[in-house]
Image (cartoon, rainbow, N blue to C red; front, side):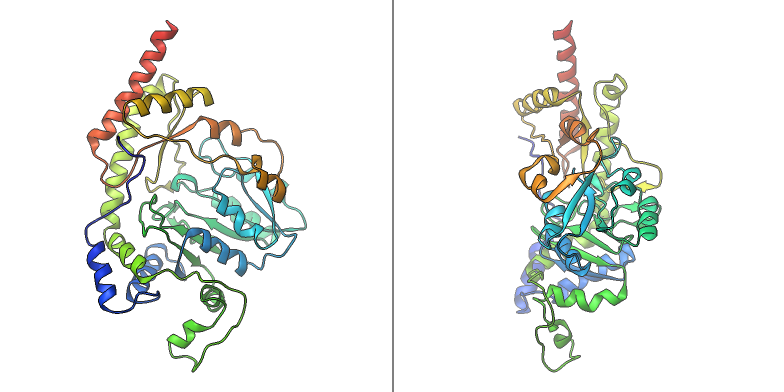
Length: 382
């Protein structure tokens, strides 16, 4: 079986974990955490990066720092992971879902303004598959209506929009280092801060609501409870694992991009025949080959193709079920306007295996099986 995902491993992870253990500093904010934070700041140009226990927790921190209060409205796409909404619901916020663009599966920036009310506090663009939302338009709307922008860049590490790193454009940016992401620490994430005045409060939120970070830097002689917070600081062992991949990030990126392009070229003729649609990367967006997906005719065809690939030893899968159709989505939010594309396009989307060190011949085999599926489908019709 060719798995859908295999967590990245470059070879130095165990060495660095052992180094952290020998240093007797495994609880977090040690040398490896600092290296990872500095690396993120360097590649993104953000003012401050703080490693977190997950992207979920990074978004929760952003919700706290944004001052979301009960009744505040937050605009986001319905086609996203539940954590994008959960973070604001936990603060008492109400979610306003808008439709996606069918080309990128990102929030349709042209629909945001109609969703704004006097209760709107923030816009949360989700950069699907590491391909940027139309951030110029979103930032312009946010500026005109005095709204915060919180980027869910869970899939966007090393992607850019017009040369600017995803996660560094809005007020806050959130990365994921889950085992399915380009760079991994098992479970983990990072919060990116654009404004320097947010740093001290972010450190307090991350350290259980205390000013413990200042204490460890020797800036105060004791620390105390300052504000609401939680335990968002990852283990140094996780950071050590991640650091090995930060060092090898260019190699990982090159490997993934090579196989992404291999898929694209191998399936181009099936797309040209009108059988499937391939991913769209708008001008000005540089993606990170986080995901390769195709869009088929409809839900029924997707189910048949998934079964066919499984029979051939290939694990392909669908993705998000739109949040506005879920029990919690109906309870904690509402869809603004018409759902023209969100549900329809989500039912057509099929993700193919793509991970660091997937073999080119495995990609070729998957491509061949998709060709065969459509050849046999045509024969049956004939």
